[in-house]
Length: 194
Image 1 (cartoon, one colour):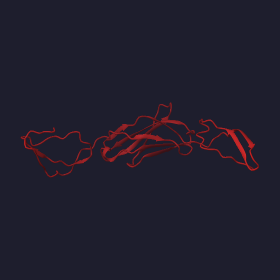
Image 2 (spheres, helix red, strand yellow; image 1 turned 90 degrees about the vertical axis):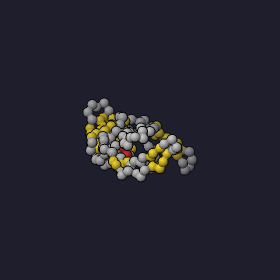
Image 3 (tube, helix red, strand yellow; image 1 turned 45 degrees about the vertical axis):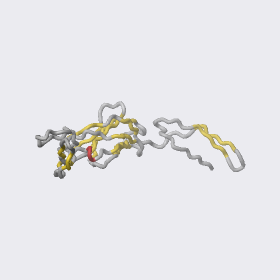
Image 4 (cartoon, one colour; image 1 turned 30 degrees about the vertical axis):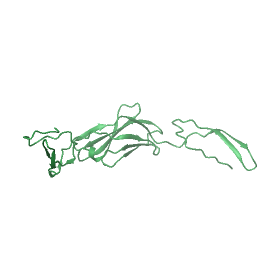
């Protein structure tokens, strides 16, 4: 309570965060005003609890062929709620029913790379990332869709044509490659001459 009866000599402080060190002061007040605060108490750490906050900004993608790269924003120390903190990464191909689970034991980690030769380029995966500590597993993030790594384009541009514009220049044009799982995201083209 904000105001404690003058005959009461103890109070329970609530809504504190788990596994955080606190110190306390007491201030006496009367109708004239508020006195000086007491000296701080000794540091006291609250008990540990299962983590309640999941990582945010789950994303990823890119990487090499046959890789699924998953990234997240790490959980800050004051929200880890105890010792032995780490991350639980769960993923499955879109449309699958069974999850693959991996544990990342490093507190500072913000990335997990799954490598498997059976992953086809640009395959969509459902991904969620959770947290754990010595008290148990905590909350999982909502599901994000992340694509596996790309392969080099498997199609050549079509409709290449050249038009002479001067004695020293030729204009080359072609049809763009449409985006699909076999071409990936075309970042650029290379024009070769001989």
